[in-house]
Amino acid sequence: MNIERYLTEHHQGTPGQIFRLLRQGRVKVNDRLIDSPRETVDTSDQVTVDGLAVTGRRPQYLVFNKPVGVQTDLTPVVPHSLGSMLNALDQQQSLQILADLPRTIAGLTLVTDDNTFLTEVQGQTWPSTLRVQLTGTTPLTLPQNIAAEVVEQRPDQVHQWTMLTLQTTALDSVTAWLESLSRVSGAINRIGWGPIKLSPDLAVGTYRGLFPQEIDALLTPATTSSLEK
Image (cartoon, rainbow, N blue to C red; front, side, top):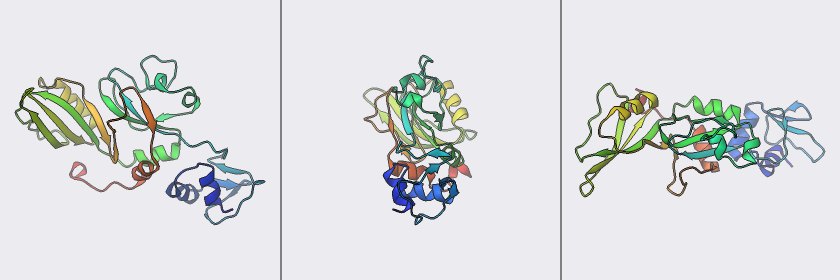
C-alpha cells in the first residue's frame, strides 16, 4: 500500500495532517526520508514519524473545560491541575499546553503531544473569545486602550445583568482589565480560541479529543482581523 494509506490506517492523522507530515520531512521508511504520498510500503518496513515507530497510537489533541482555580500543570500528582484531570492512559503521554489560562480564568484550554503542531498553531496568534456576566443592563463601552472587540452584549432585564462576549489577542491585559471592573459578577470564561469553540456538552472539569476538522482548522492560516491591525 502507499504511505498515505499506511499512515491513515495507523491513525497518524487526517489526510491534511499526513500530507503535512510528509511535506515537513517527518516520515521515514527504513531510515529513508519519504515525502511522496505515493511511496509504497509493506508490513516488513520500519516506518517512523518524528523518529518514533508508527504503532497505531494516535497523537493526542485534547480540549479541556478548565474550572476556576485549576492550574495548567500537566503533572498528574499536582492537585487542582490539568494533569490531575487526565485519565491513566493520557497521564503517560508527554503533553504540552497549547492555549494557556491563569488559575482565575475558566474555560477552553488545549494540550497536545505533537510538538510540530504546537509550534505551527502557536504561530497563528488566534484570538480568545471570552464571556463574563456583568451586573446591570447598561451596555459596557470598551476603553480605547483595550485590545478587544465586543461580540455580543445580552442584557437580562429580569435578573438585571448583562452577558458580555468579546474577542481579544491580548488575553492577559484584557482579563486583568475585566477583573478590575466592579460590574463583573462571575467567572471569566474562555469559550473559544480561534476556530475552536467550547461545546455546551463538555462539562466543567472534563476534556475530550479534538475532532479531525478542528485540528485541520487550527492549522489553516488565520485571516487578518481588526484585532491584529
